[in-house]
Length: 184
Image 1 (tube, rainbow, N blue to C red):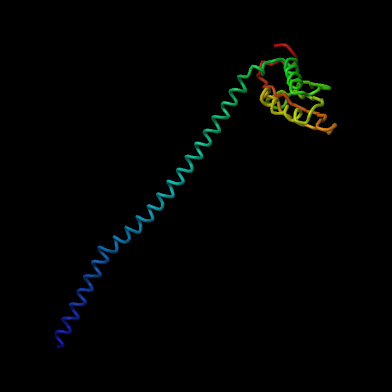
Image 2 (cartoon, rainbow, N blue to C red):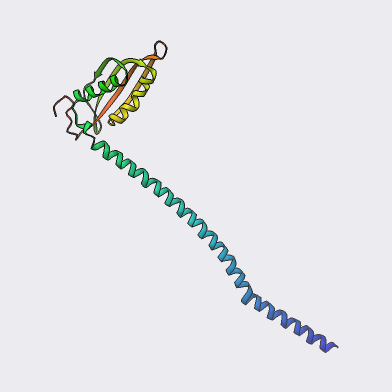
């Protein structure tokens, strides 16, 4: 029986060795490859999501750039930009009167250099209904895209009325052919 025990032990040891070699040589690499494939799929999924987000960001940026380019084009092709100072002040006065504002004064300042632009400050004083006074701001923005509101002060009058003091800045490109003093 001792001999069979040695043979049985040798057989068991041989089977264990064959099983270990088969596992290390065949099953272990498959498990490792499967684990690596899972990690790679996860990385691919993450990278695709990042790419999708970057494409969305790029699309949003392109949309914004296109909008800004269109706004610039409409700004530079606006015929109002080439009118004289007197004509612009007249248009601004008509806009205020059309909005229901009783003007007390319109005082344009002298043109002055401000970096790459020339600017003319315009001070308007008037009275009217609160809604008319406030409603004039978007009208100025849409009619005069080269004007900026610097200051607006509204003081209380009777009931729904008020007095306003409005400081506007007219931005004129230096290379613009506009002669702010009246000649074209």
